Length: 281
Image 1 (cartoon, rainbow, N blue to C red):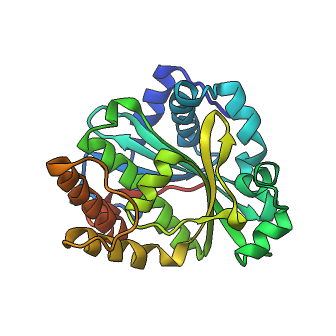
Image 2: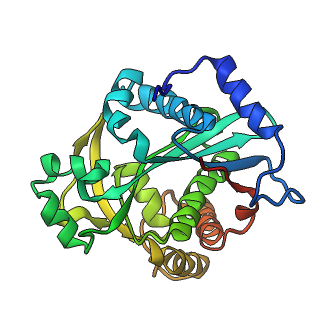
């Protein structure tokens, strides 16, 4: 199968608009459309290449991972990949994308790559978290295009990607998730209530252009309860929440309120689930 990590802009636009203007998809409630829609697709779907192009557009300037690097790193996992592509109905173009790699043990990229960085074998990793012979979802990439970052739209795009992961994994009955996160993403995920455990007790390391990366494990059935608790703690007045609130004074209060709202939406699907479409093939 030929995949595209660097598509012409006109092809990205045509593929995105073809989906948006096509017939209604099962699982989508068209009565309450939002600006953005998250589409869950398999590696052979036309939107999968749009997702790959978004990955490259984000990771090349951020970490130096151009199309050649992306192809070399993720090529072995294409037939195990599931893509979440967020489309902007207003522009008819993508706004973000994420990729999951499904498999057992070293069939997923995080578990295959981690031993060289953390000094633990694959067997030690899977046994440390009860993953032996269990299906694992590797949340391999998350990418929001720069024009959406730092705005309220960026939060919606990223929230749709994370919620689509939780919905799809729960639907598939998967219990175990692994991920490589740089320090900024790790802080953000912790602040919205995800319990992320260092893979086999590992320490941070440099990985694919990021100087501070963590290999992490999470238990998918815990997501909703953990984020519900975090939202309640952040909305209270105490300090019984996970993570660290950035800023000072009123900026800190605003950041706390935003994190609480994101945790609540991810836990409940409020305003998100109506715009998640399953189009896998």
